[in-house]
Amino acid sequence: MPVSLPVAVDVSPDGVVFAQSVHARDFHMPARTESFHKVLYVQRGRMRLHGKELARRAARQGDAGAVFVVPAGREHRIVDEVPSVILLLCLGDRWLRRTRQVADLWSELVAKSDAATLELGTAMAAEWEQMWRRALLEQASNRTGAEVLCDALTLQALVMLARQTPGQGDDSAEARVRQVTREIEETFLERWTIDEAAGRAGLSRRHFTQSFRRLNESTLVNYLHKLRLDHAERLLASGRHTITGAAFSSGFEDLAHFYRLFKRRHGRAPGEWLAK
Image 1: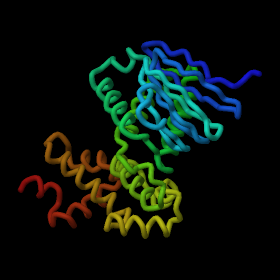
Image 2: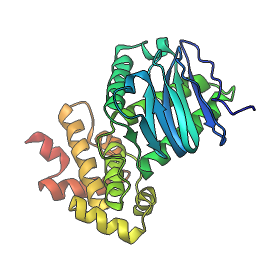
Image 3: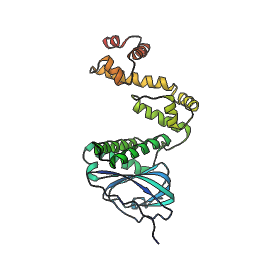
Image 4: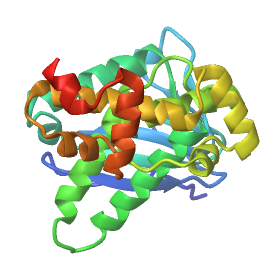
């Protein structure tokens, strides 16, 4: 009787491939090794990852949101506990080793994954899935720069995973607010609103506002102002930016507003602060 098998993926040593594996109830995967590296993201279902490296401990279980990293040449197989949908990021060995920085990033990610199953909370899982869909769209197109954009999205995805810390898979309301806070700290140059931040955390505006203030001892608006002012000060202190350039490069779209906030913090205008 035929059974559903893992999706076949062909990856060149110099390339990356985004793919999806949808498992039926009769899914079966024999033990296998690949000539390329893989990141497995469990979008739905529940699975276990078996392999020789796991022989002395229980197979690794992954619910929705779990991420497994499988280096090239490592024997492994997937066993579904609940029929799963897995988003794959497959990487050629030469692609990963084209720069020392990328190779080191991958080594760090493998070590992190070997130590514990990586789990993405709600906000980060949504971001991962959005990047994967965008990359799949570019991969299927012949638009100018599609391959370059796929490479960029791959690097962004790897950095996101490498920055995971233990406990980030916790999906409680508090953990989601902390995760959004970390996202804000990395993207404060972008436009953030309370509604957007609350939506990322999967909370109501009121619940998010209360939780954010309790955890950060600040409102979202004041937190953004602090991050942007800190960055503007670093740019100004470097001596390579004008006051206007530092303000706009730090996320301030209104120069007068920047001056007001800066003077409120330091008691003097940016030019006077620089001349002290």
